[in-house]
Image (cartoon, rainbow, N blue to C red):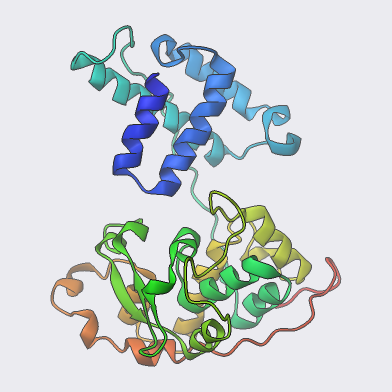
Length: 302
């Protein structure tokens, strides 16, 4: 009951991807803990569940979970616990113990190189169907993967070569304001050739419209791209490649930051997007140069 109420409340306040993550993690916890897990929470339970999550045999396909994945699992339970405690104080629930925490800290992400245009094109060339379309959008816009999957054809103006990123697709405060951005000529040509103008731009074939990281990893691997630029974040690598590759071409930093939805600091309060060379920057995005993908291990695209 409490778990269901918590997920429903999250759906009113949080991004859909965050809600799905909480629901998935809490369902795994419920299966481990049994009935009424929120009313029986304790520091010892968190500690025992932490050991359970760290065991390699409990991970997907018997692969050990990374420390950051384990932390996120425990974080979802601790957020639920605090939420239920606050609701209990209002009289909604009874029997929820005072919240506690294991105090796990975020694992710093390793420094990662960004892929080049040719490396991203190699990965696109190794993909097929809607996933190939998704990677083209990521490579040409620098959007987050769920933002790209959420784009609808009514957000696209091919005649004006511009794209609307709706506020509900945003993750950061800057992105949640929503924005219109110009589209690179390469993407205009791609979208014009897709032959449809309704529904979602990327026709994801999964019910929940989720792109799996392991599928993107397989594309990078099939293309023989150096794992140093994509391993651990195969979708985000396109976003990093977009921003870094534009900077290598001398693109205006503030324009790149606006295109990908980053904060521009205090200057964004005084310098609007109309003063940024956005059209000139997206014009720097090169055309796709696709080649036949190599078998894994036969080539490393530098």
